[in-house]
Amino acid sequence: MDHHHPDPGEGPDPAQARLAELRAQIDDTDRKLLRLLDQRIECALQTARLKTVITDGGREGQVISQVRAAAYGLLSEDFVSDLYRSIIDESKRLQARRPRFGGFQGEHGAWSEMALERWDGNLVPIPCRTFADVFEGVTSAAFDRGIVPVENSLGGSVVEVSDLLIETTLSIVGEVRVPVRQCLLALPGTTLGEIRSVRSHPQALAQCRGYLARHGFAVEPFYDTAGAARWLMFEGVRGVGVIASPLAASLYGLEIVAEDVADHEGNETRFVVLARQLHTGPADKGSLVLTTEDRSGALVQALGAFAGHNVNLSRIESRPNRGKHGQYTFMLDFEGDPADDDVARALSALSSQGVSYKMLGFYRSDPGTATTGEGA
Image (cartoon, rainbow, N blue to C red):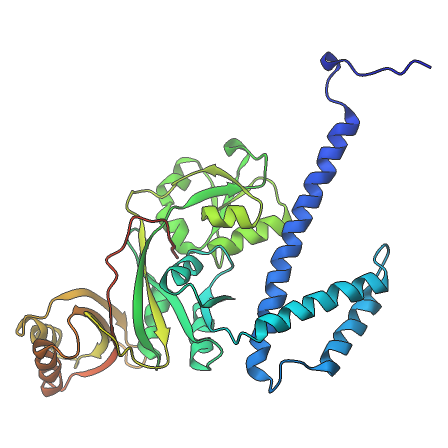
């Protein structure tokens, strides 16, 4: 019997097209499974701080029983049991290392995670939904360190973080400056003309405001840049783009539709590292929060304490005093270290004026680099 072989001019082979489609679905499913496995193992690692022993036979038996009962269709109970025993063994192996944790706001692939990696690559990055969760995690000792963005060269101060720093008992022990290369991401095969709306963190949207307006995109604020990329991977909504990092594109199987979409070059975010104790090593920068009296010239007098002792202020930010209407709290960054006589005299002058202030810490400044890093 003669078999007809499609001529190249007859168009694509339907069987081959279907095979390619199914393989793409498998690749997409694998990415989703890996991201969920990341999440599971991170949770397991964090439980190690709450247990007296790593091995808990009762809990392991409960997990195996649960997944066997949940096995369905082609997944046999024995296959599921073997799979989860491997996952549990890997979790215990990692728990035995007693890793140190660093909390960051967002999902894996967020600029904050990359900043944390640059500051200390030995910390296990743990995603947090909100900035407040980062502060709480460090305060409660769930995390050894936390990292949060304080200002962006295009979007300005991150006011939510400023308010949390004003109220916190934590200390700043370091800073990281990183260039931010925002990209427009979408599902594979999506063209720029097919995108109708764009999701991302409000800071990222602010950094790309002009680009988004020129293309007429509807803007939808989201809790995180990489979180928007993760959402798009799981939901698969066509016609939606996200502003996020190239790393987020790789992690969540998205395509970079447009690169470097921030409105200006030199887009950079400054992060600070949080800890429960003060930094005790070399330092050349300090941060504090001060509240002046509600009288004319009080702020000028307070700032004069620094100018009068040759201490350079590198940043001043004001925030409304939540406790007293009409009053403001000021956050100051200045150059110097606690052993510097000029710094000591400036702080003493503040005290003599009756100014209430709280030291957030002394730490080593980061001049920034040209390497790709992280953002808000």
